[in-house]
Amino acid sequence: MTEANFDFDLIVIGAGYGGFDAAKHAAENGLNVAIVESRDMGGTCVNRGCVPSKALLAASGKVRELADAEHLSGFGIHAAPVRFERKKIADHANNLVATIRTNLTKSLERAGVTILRGEGRLEGIQKVGLREPSGVDRIFTSKDVILATGSDPFVPPGIEIDGRTVFTSDEAVNLEWLPRWIAIIGSGYIGLEFADVYTALGCEVTMIEALERVMPTFDPDLSKLASRRLLDGRDIDARAGLLASKVTPGCPVVVELCDFNTRKLIEELEVDAVLVATGRVPATKGLNLDSVGVETNRGFIPIDESMRVLIDGNPLSHLWAVGDVTGKLMLAHTAAAQGTIAVDNILGDFREIDYRSIPAATFTHPEISSVGLSEEEAKVLASKEKFDLGVVRSYFKANSKALAEKESDGIMKLLFRKDSGEVLGAHIYGLHAADLIQEVANALARRQTVLDLSCEVHTHPTLSEVVEVAYKQAARQVSTL
Image (cartoon, rainbow, N blue to C red; front, side):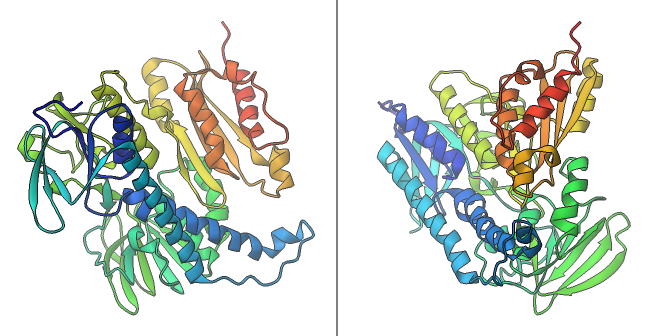
C-alpha cells in the first residue's frame, strides 16, 4: 500500500532496460509504481541499439556466410550468387523492435505499473515533475525515485550531423540506404558491428580511429588476431592515430583528417556517408539535478554500490540511479541488474553489484567477448597485492567443433592468481564467444578457482572445451603449497 502522503511508492524516470527491470520488479513485490518515458518504451537498447543492430547482424551474417564461396567449397557446397533485399532486412529489424517494445509495455501493464508519458525531472526530494506531450505540467510525489534516463550518441566537435549522410547508430539501425563508400569514425564495438554489417552488404568502409591503435578498448592479443579477419580480411581501410576534425554533410561528405597528436591536417576524404561511432554520453541535462543538490561528473550521476545517488560521497535518501547515466558499464544487462538491485535495497534487502563479473560482447562475425579485468588491470592488482599473475591461452584451432565448422580462427585468454587460482578475467575471440564468456562470468561471480573449474566436465565436441582447456592449463600453474 502506498503511504498516504505519496502518490506512488516508486517513480522510475526512463523506460529503458534499467528502468523497465526496476519498475517491473518493484511492482511484482507489491509497490505502487509509475514509470516516466518521453520517447519509445524500451529505451536505446530496444529501439536504437542492441535489438535492431543484432537483427541487422543476423541477416547480414547470413549474407556473408552464403557469399563466402571458398568457405562453403570446403564442405563441398556450391551456392548460387547471393541476392538480398535491403528493405526486407531493415523491415526484419523494425518488426523485431516493434514486437519487443509491445511485449515490454504489456509486461509492465500486467504488473500494475502506471505508465506516464512525457519528460520527467526532479522537483526536489521525493518529487517528480512531468511535462506531458500536450504541454501540461504535473507534479507527483513518491517515496523513492530511480533515475534511468540512459544515454545518447556522442558527437565530437566539428562533426555536423544531418541524419542522412552523416549519422549516428540511432539512424544507422534503420538501414535506410547502403552507401557505396562509408567512413566509420571509431573502432569500438559499435563501429566494428556496423562495419561487419556494411561490408557484408557490399559497402566499402574506411575506419578512422583517433587513438594509436585500432580496436583500442579490446585486449591487444585478441585485437591483433581479430583484426586479420574482421578488418584486413574485408573491404575495410582501418587507420589509427587520425582525428576526424571536421565532417561536412552532403554529396559527397567531406572528412578532414588530422594527426591526433599534432592536429596537423593530413588528408581530406570525400565519401558517400559517415557513421559517427565515438561513444555515448549520459542523458541527464533535463533531470533538474540541482533541485536536490546533485553534481554530476562529466554528466554522469555518482552512485554507490547499492545504486544510491551520492552528494559529496554520501548517499542521498530515497534517490537512486541506474544504467548509462551512472557511467559504470554502459551495457543493457548492467542497467537491468542495477535496476533490480536498487529495488531490492528499497525493499530493505541490502544488495551490492559486482561489476567485475558482468560480461560484455561484440557481435561481429566471429564475436569478441570479455569479463573481469584486462591484462593490464590484472598486472596492477598483482603488483599491489603481491601475487603472481597467471595468463594462459586456449586456441579454437585445437577444438573439434570449431574445426568441424571450419571456424577455427579464435583464441581465449584467461587471467588468474597463481597463489589461489582465483579467476580474474577472460577475453575471447571466436565462434560464439558471446555465449562462451558467460561460463567464465559465472565463475567470477562465485570467486571460483581454476583448480575447481578444471574438474568440471564439458560436453564433447563443443566450443565450451576451449574454456575447459584454459582452466586445465591454468590449474597446472597454481601453487599448491
